Image (cartoon, rainbow, N blue to C red; front, side):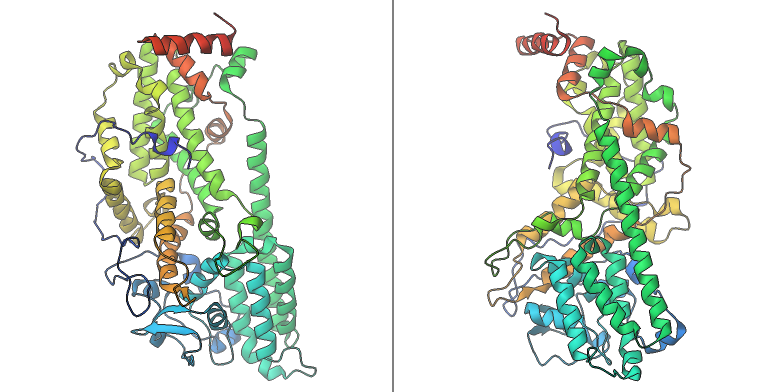
Length: 544
């Protein structure tokens, strides 16, 4: 993690908080995997039946191919209901007898299994279709053990062999029974994990299997064509997004360099571009939701991939990572923090600097009320960077009561208890929302990554008998699926291209330039600062 994400945690002021428009807060118990005793029966993670988790809507949506197909599709319970239970309860679903062939259940909950048995459990047949919770959880976690293209190849092989799809003179009635289920599995895979199909091997296997099941009926041919069109559209969209990000990064320069070379080109500041803090908070929310939307669920798992101890010759996925949207989002957090610090250190006059600080406090407060906790934390981080926090004369002119309140909300003590409480409140509000504005939940992202990291590190992927510890992956899927719900909310605010352009492209100060601007604004207070000031003036400005 970049150090700026947590530097504000070190010993800053904290006071009590009651916001005028505070979210209705509801404390919910949080399940921690690390440090819990494992069950003797499975060596897995103890589960809590009290945990209530919001679940993402994409997997909950029924995308009916046709009424004809729906008659043959097994109907599973709503996705949320499945994850609200303590795990996957096989009594809830279409029955499929496992000859204890590598799958281990406790109280009807799937806790572990051999990798081969779990793959087989993913594959539908005439009388069985896997529940959605299992599909999402296994597709998410399987990449810790094998590449997605290897899983797709195995799924295709099992479908073709078990349903005898390669036989000449294939029975069309048999195809009509199995085709809707295979199509549904492929649809869920391509809709939820589309980035897997940036790999040509994935796409090749997908087309081969899809063409086999489409051969028996014109309706299925149309459905396969629609599936492929939707997938290609998603992949084209993410490619365009990545090109835009690359252009932005390619043109980024240090603000001090621009000031020295083209002083007139950068006379604007954030307040001249947008003097309304509420409007700026809304435009920040636009950026956050857009960038969140491109993060695939698998990126959380890929970030922590290590070598599978049962695989002697390869890492599981790290060498074939196809996207870096998660990293791009963390870079956006850092940019926003540096932008805040730059805007504060830029003005020559003390009263102007104080005005900018108060402006960002109001922006941060509105971010809190919107439910945009990531921008809120980035703003607080920027204001707590050393070049800003050392401006004592400037801060003396600022009414800091509102800032103290916000800092208290994001106080890292007790494992971010205040923030987690506010997040639960925002999530609860989102559940009962009547408008997109009330649905917005943008978590403090680096803490979300940290939670998933410790869940991954605190529990083994495999049990002593070599089984996959599936109980761990239920918990992982719960955390990721909640994020999936939040990222799909459409931003209700009108876009302002001028403000967005400024936020995304205006140059910001480097660390050294921030310190130099800070010392130029308020003189160094000790010999260490004086020596650093002289060095920076010589290095950056060519002065002595």
